[in-house]
Structure formats: structure tokens, C-alpha cells
Amino acid sequence: ERYQEGMASIVSSLLLLFLVPCDAGILRGGGLLTKRFRLNSQHVDFLHLKHLEESRGYGAKASNSTTHFYNEAVLDHFGDGIPSASSVSHWSQRYYVDDTFWGGDDFPVFLYIGGEGPQGPVSPSLFMYELAQEHQALVLALEHRFYGESQPTEDMSISNLKFLTSHQALADLARFVEYVKSSGPETMDNASTPPLELKASAVNSKVVVFGGSYPGDLSAWFKLKYPGIISGSIASSAPVFGEYNFEQYAQVVGTALAYELIGGSSECYSAVKKASDLLHELVTSTSPYGTSKKIPDALKPCSEIKSDLDLSTYESQVMGAFQGVVQYNLEGRKPYVSDLCNAMTNETETDLLERLSSTLALVYEGQSCLPSSFQDDNVSPLADTKFSRKGCDLECSSMRQWIYQSCHEFGFFQTSTGGHMNPFISLDSLGIKNAGAEICKQAYNVSGDYTGPASNPAGLVANTAYGARDLASHNITIVNGNMDPWHALGIINSTDPFFQRWRWCLAIFATGHSERVNCFDRRHCALPGYVCHKRLWRGHRSDCLGTRGYTN
Image (tube, rainbow, N blue to C red; front, side):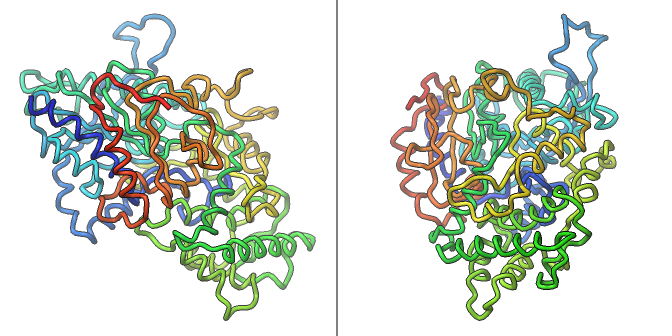
């Protein structure tokens, strides 16, 4: 009874989870790979999170989590016919368990959904952890297939990557939840290594799933496709609308550079645009490109620019620097937007290109030139079919896997083609052909007539399969920040410039926030909007584990 009485307050508390900075998100600068986040950019940079929490005194608490491998994960949930037990291919999927606060029978289960990178245990730095303590929840985290140490096949050849889809990942989640619910002190577990030993049965526990960015998509889609398995879904910064040519990303970046609340200004936006225009004009004024002596040393290409594809690699480093900072703004890892804008509007330096050089130096520390080889800097790293070494833990590479998903399911390739509030529009090598199609063709041997992810007459299959912004489900909470570039593909308020019609879900919008509205504890919320959105939530709150849904 006390559990049921307490559940109504869970969702009202959950709002805080998404109105604070966090270390999460998907990034591919300009559709290409950027140096700041290395070649294994991931949904959550757990190594950075570990260092950050240690600096804040959280490190010792993380030892409460235990690591397991579920050895009965299924490779293909959708094979033809009804498979026999002997014909099903199994593999080992990594997961984490923390029962520190769990009240046992009938108390809830909070499941953190892994995404496009290695998954670590749920950190005490996350407000989800604080909520677990408040509501005596069992805390779980499940790593996504093909990422981290959850390697279902021998390698990442194209024939094996066909099993890397969001549909398979959702089925993994469903199977895992059912496995946990069937476990308890009265059962002998032979499915995990080490065995899962719960102090009580979770068979009657209701499950709430959490996810941010691509896992935010999975969180929402899990409730949509498997409504009887979980009771509530929290989807933060979820780009539920697949978009091949994601030109809106650069437009939100431009808006952020002009947004005073986070340290931007109209002067900053103007300086970035003028510098980009000037650099493009200078780089393309010579043959071969990029050989002008007027280019500052730190902005010179690292290798000869032999083609438009090389030029796109070079120019993606310029746009990508600003993209990365905006997406990860105020998450505890400098530089922030304010730092870039201070450098770009520094009146003691009159040369705009020198200002741009100093600005990029804040992002690419110690880098003496800008990568400019499409083959060496983009295609070759993605073409490596080998998984990272066994035991790679949180350092496992992820880019081949994620860009494969982008090519085949979602798109999300960030281009410079958007018109409004786009300071990078002059960097015209970053169209969808160079920033998307050519990467997919050359890294994954996609056919020459490739025109984007799988589609049908109604659009991308990813949109028609899940409903895009019309998620026909209930008890899904969608949260976005208006300075998060990914919010342009999400379910957002009608006042936002990127608004598209939506129904069914409760949408909460955090003014001034980037993608960091997902995870860190509430003490790090400093932007306006926190209190008013908390009040908004309390006005709409109900038992997320009941049957009531929300409509707009």
C-alpha cells in the first residue's frame, strides 16, 4: 500500500531529472567525425563521467553496482518461422544491478537503457539514482547490442551488422525485463554470469525505463511496442523523427550562439558567420584548396585537399567545434558557449580568422592543423570491422556501429544547408551528399544509388514504424531543452520554431538547456525554467504506473 501511495510522486520527481546538465548525447560533427570527441563518440562518455564524479566525491558509491552478462540474449528475434531451442543463436549482453535501495517485493524497477556507446553502471551522479533511493527502486542498466562489451557476433562485417537495429534492441529490452521479473531468491539462475541473485522477486514490480538521446527514442518506442511490459517511459532529448538531411542541427547551433542566457550574443553569431564565410572563401581561392598563406597556421589543412570530399572533412572540423560545444554546453567539460563567444568577440584581436583560430584551439587542444582527408580521417576508421579488444570496458569503440545505424535507419547527418540562423551556410561542401551519402557508400559498401536510410512512399521506415512525432501510446514523458540541437527532431512545444504537430505524450520544454536536460543531479541546475517546469509537471502529475495517458 505504501508503495502504491508513493508511486504518484515518482513522476513529479522525475521532472528534475531532465532539467539539469548531463553528459549524454549523439554527435557527428557535420555528419563527419570530429576530433574533439575522438572517433568513439558515444551516448554517454562514461570515462568523463567517472572522472567528474570522482572530483565531486561520488566515486566510492559506484561500487554498489555489480556487473553481469546475460548469456541467453537472442541474436535474431525476428527470424522466419518458429525457431526451435537448438536453432536460436545466443550471446552475452552486459548489464548492471544495484539493489542498494530496493524495497523488495512490489517496489519498482528503474531501467537505464544503453545506447550508442559502452554502458557503465548507473552513476550516483544521476538524479535517477537519487530517485531510486527515494522510491526504493531496483536500479538496472542494459548495454545496447554491438556496443561496449555486448558483442553478439564475431565481428562487425556487413553480414553481421544486419542484426544491429532498433527493433532488435527493443526486443532485447523486452526479453531482459521478463528475465529479471522471473528471477528471485527462490530460483536458481543459470542464465547470467555471475548469476543474478535478487533478494526478492520482481514479478509484481512495475518498471520505468529511462533514456536520453537515441536511448530516449528507445525508451519511448519500448512503451509503444511493448506496452504490457513496462509501466512508464522517460525519454529525454529523443529525436523521434528520423531525418536524413539534418540541416536543422546547424540552425539550433546558430541560435545558441546568439542566445544571451547561455553566454551567446548577436555579435558572437555575426562573428562566427563572417569568419566562416571568410575562411571558406580563402580556402577555395587557391588550387589546390587550402594553400593560401593567409590562412592562420592552426587553421591550415593537415593534408592536401584533393577533392570536395576532402574539403568537407576540413570544413566539418570548423562547424563541428561549435556543434560539440553547444550540444555539451554546461555539462562540466569546458569550453562552454560563453567561452567560444568571448574568443570570437575579443576586440583586442582585429583579425577574424585569428579569432576563429583561437576559438578552435579551445576545443581542439594541442592540434596544429585541421584534418582534411576524407579517406584517412573518415572512411578508414569506419571501415574497420573488428570489435575492440575484450575487456575494453568503457573504452570500446562505437563509431562504425552508430554510423551504420545512421546510414540504414535514422539519417541524422548534420549538414550546412539550412538557411535560417545558420552561421555555417557558406561551408557548402557539407551537403548531404558529402556528409551522408558518400560516408555510407564508402565505409559500408552501400550501393551507388543510395539516397538515404530505408524508406517507403510515406517516408523513412523508422518514422512509419514508430509514428515519428505521433507516438500512439501513453505514460511517455518527452523532455527537451530549446538549445539542444536534437530537439528539432523531437516532440516540442508549439512555440518553438521547429514545432511539428504531435499527440499523446506529455511534453516538457526546458528553456536555455542543451541536451544536458537528461541526467546530472539537481544541484547543477542554474538556468531559468527549472522552477516553472517543476510546477508545470506538478500540475499534470498522475500515477505514471497507472493507465492514464496524456494528450495534447
